[in-house]
Structures are given as structure tokens and as C-alpha cells.
Image (tube, rainbow, N blue to C red; front, side, top):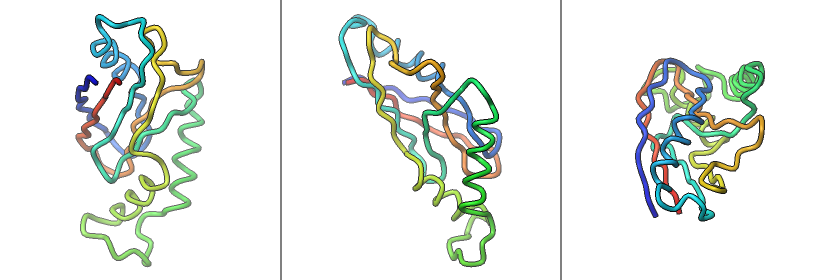
Length: 139
């Protein structure tokens, strides 16, 4: 197994496409073995951000996903007791729990086997900018 880390800075809450960054990491990890089938695992090392594979052709899909999760886990709900870091603290954990902290993507002929309209997204659930660390592993 080969691994590397990616440091990603988010600007605000929302989906940030990171397909190119993950593809670059995979190219570096499969160098010398490009024809062997493998699996890429991407893992976000945070509890208030997540990873998803979603449509990357129409930005309205990302906006609609964000709007849906905001309705499902609204900021500032008085029922939340975990609010140490502000009104977006607990909702960000709920959103991360409902999505994923890791993704598995097959590698075929040295490339991520994503579909035509699929992109890899880091989903920032906090309102303000953050530095996020991802681990990319190829097995």
C-alpha cells in the first residue's frame, strides 16, 4: 500500500471539487505499476467535513445538495447542546455523519474509474474557512 496526504483549504461551507488533486496523488502513488488494478481510498481526517462523489457538470446539483442538508440539520437549532464552537458546530457533525468520511474508488489502467459526470468533493460543513487534511491510499 502507498499513501500520501493532501492539504486542502476550504473558503466556506459547501462542496469543493477535489478530483484533480486526488488524480494527481494517485498518479504519484501508482507510478511504476500503472496497469495493475487497484483501489484508491480517500479519507478526511475531520469530524465536521465529509467526502462525496457527485455530479460535476452542473453546479446546481451541489447547490441543491447543500440546501437540502441545511434544511435537514439547521444551524442554531435550540435542541443542540454541543455548541462550543458556535451555532454551526453540531450541525456540521450531523452533516458529516449523514455523508461519508471515506471513499473507495477503483483504479483501472492507472486512472480513477469515475463515471462521465462524477467528481470527488470535499464537503465543508462549517461556515468559515478551514484547513482540511486528507489521506489518499492506493492498495
